[in-house]
View 1 (cartoon, rainbow, N blue to C red):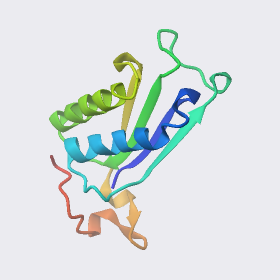
View 2 (cartoon, rainbow, N blue to C red; view 1 turned 180 degrees about the vertical axis):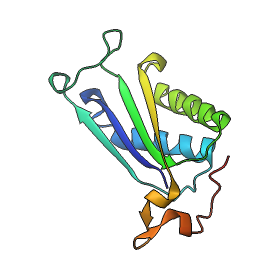
View 3 (cartoon, rainbow, N blue to C red; view 1 turned 180 degrees about the horizontal axis):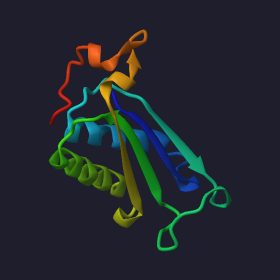
View 4 (cartoon, rainbow, N blue to C red; view 1 turned 30 degrees about the vertical axis):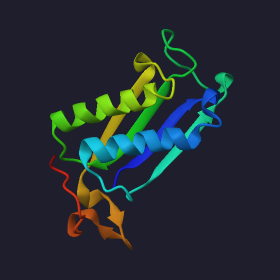
Length: 128
């Protein structure tokens, strides 16, 4: 049940769905979330509305993923690789991709009518 925010520049206008799908595909492949488990937002900003590292291009992209705590470092590495590769296929240089994972304990998520995530059967593994 990850929730994703993608922040990038105006270059991505017209490619919004491709970017969203690239990030989702990486999560399905690397951390095993179900294909239909989608919750992502993409924000595209004009250059004058954002500051990026001096060494980065206008394609600098930050991906923030809020997810249940419990994935192994190996699963996180796989996720990082897949995200970088998938975004590179859309023209984002590897060095211009920043990924931030925000791990949240399951009891801090209210889902399916406000039930704590720790009380739900998820249908996928978190401890990968």
